Length: 119
Length: 111
Image (tube, rainbow over all chains, first blue to last red; front, side, top):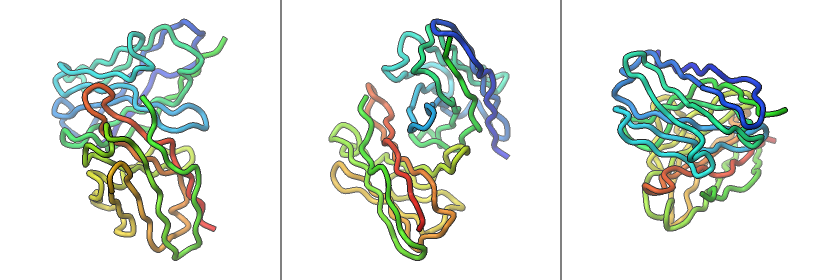
């Protein structure tokens, strides 16, 4: 079964840092592009970042550019999101999501991990 | 990066059909046949329902269909069922600068 499991969320103060992880199983992780997508409480989905299968190509939404860093470890079947200089508006459930066969749609999604930025 | 425009809510009775629109620009929806749709039930992760404008993943009911005209994509659900009540989001590829953009989401209520 294809599965994505996020971890690392929690409460952090404004200006702080947090590192999210996404553990993949049930598929050849190194062959797939991956993404982070977030959803603020009661709000819609927002694409955050993309990384190619090899890690050589990376994209970010303008809202996180310069503060967040996406990375992956294909040997550990894991995706990461390093979040620095966190703001209240970064409060959201963060999902990792796999691209489908190098195409820009997400399937499957993990269950999400909640990040709360508050003092 | 501006979100694609969706109606905030739509409703329909069981057995009826509804259509949710997703309006973008010539830089995203209008330029690429790379629109996808997601269903999200409360407290759950989104689920891919339509990809490449009109294709259905294996296991998705044929009551769900997609189309596109110009800068607007649409999701149609026919034969509405209670379990279709959920939030629906469209998403489009938007080129190498903006990359991916979601719609604001539409809450479907089955009356």
